[in-house]
Image (cartoon, rainbow, N blue to C red):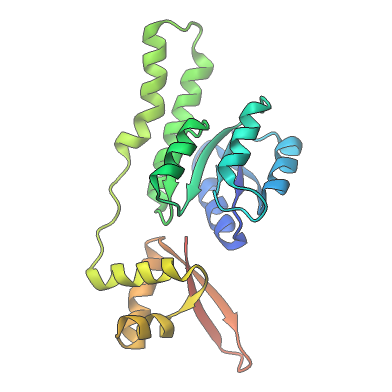
Length: 222
């Protein structure tokens, strides 16, 4: 089993991704942590093979942490999992040794594709006995297989895309009523769009209970 550690500052997002990892054959999520400090302790204690690492952590930049792990000789691979889409961050992740970079929100199928590519790459690496050119080419091909095979991002109806963008821009839980007001649509219409996005795995539904005892739905990106 490939031992995987989930590192994300949002415990709800960490839980969702940990559950998804557990659904992929050959992977075991051995822990969830929400800061770089906790990640370092968990890496030493649990000895994971793979990190799913967010960039925005409360106490340290995730890529900075990855660089320090590489510099110290810590034997752990890393897939960056973040909402950051600027090229400077992507380049930093690549030069810091990340094996792949997933932009939130992403579907379970996309995560599974990359994990399966990573698993194949590890199997090739573990079984190789020499480092001739053919072996090296095979290792690079196995590592990039998930990039070639990854399905395209889902095409959404324009208003649904605006709803997703509004949740992403909120930076925290936001209700259907707030989305409806921003988009200029009715609350039932906004709720319908948000429900579809949640079913697609692009949003996380959070249920809280107010003073009336009725659940209040809010949404964050997955």
